[in-house]
Each structure stands twice: as structure tokens, then as C-alpha cells.
Image 1: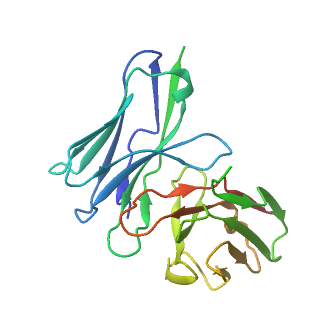
Image 2: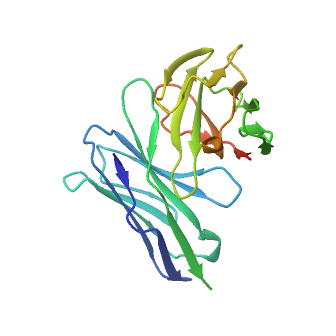
Length: 113
Length: 114
């Protein structure tokens, strides 16, 4: 079963506009959520994270929002830049001693100049 | 550069052969993780080490797979009698313990089994 879901395989936005990437999860025991960015032929790069006790975390152009009641989080990028074009993965920490991450299937963001 | 490194970056092998991949984590990181990523999917957890101890293995890790981290530094992942279904990107990540939630990934090893 897919515990972390990214229902939009792709998203296209104009440079300078806002990009909103969405993620849904099913397990209420997840205690930490992360976003990774991945370019072709490279490993995922950590972008931003949020604890389950928070509802917002901001870092420069990137903001992550968490709605625990809806089991939904989103990543906002504003303003979007062509260099942001990549696959974005949402991940959730499973809790316990492992710290293993459970990933969604990714959203391909294309920022058009 | 002090990031996570993986070797080789690409490996092509014939079905039935054995392959071994190496991961060098960020030097002060105690935890090391292996993930596998197939086309159109996100990375899937395989196993993790706390120092030299392998503390969890996914059911995805069949008995043809073995991982080691003999001195708590670099790790190796071996696949015996490779099958075409083993073709994937194998990713290594490392992190500090406890309070640090972020895992830092290497560039991956792309395995193609023909």
C-alpha cells in the first residue's frame, strides 16, 4: 500500500509564478516530513522539512505547509525559477528507531522561462 | 567534497552474475541507509546500519542481497545471481543519529541486468 502519495505526476508553471506541489499520507504515526529534489542522474537532494507538531516551515523561496487533520502537505516555491525544474519527492519518517523514509512517487516540475 | 559517494556509478551485468556496490557516507554520520529506486517510483528502503550494526532489513531485501558495514565507515551492497528485476538505481544515504531527521543521499549506482 502506498502510504505517501503524490497524485500529480507533473506540473508546469511560468517563471516567476508560484509552484505548489502536493502530497497526501495515510499513516498518522509519521512524525516528520521532508521534501527532496532530484535532477536526472543524481541522487535526491534534501530541500526542506517539517515536524508533525508544526504547520508551516519556511526557508527562502520554499515553504512547506502541513495539515494534519487532512493528512496533507504541500510545498510552495515562489518565485519559481527555471533551475527549479526537477522531480520533487515527498517523504515521511516512519518514526521509531529506524528513521527510514517512505517516499511518494514524485512530481516532475517544469518551470518555463 | 565531503558528501556521500557511491561507486561505481553505472554497472551493466549479465543475469546470474554477482555485483557489489560501495558507499562512503559523510564522515561523521553514524547511520547509513540503502534504498532502491525503479522507474516512476520513489526510493524504497532496503536496510540501515547504526555504526557497524545492521539493524533493519526490508522484505524487499531477498536472500540474494547482503549488505555490510564492517568498520562503521563505508558500506557494501552485494547482489548474488542477479535477475533482470534487480535493474534499478541503488541509493545510499547517511545521517547523524537521533535528532537529525534529514538523510543525505549519494548519486546512486545504476544497475542494468541484461
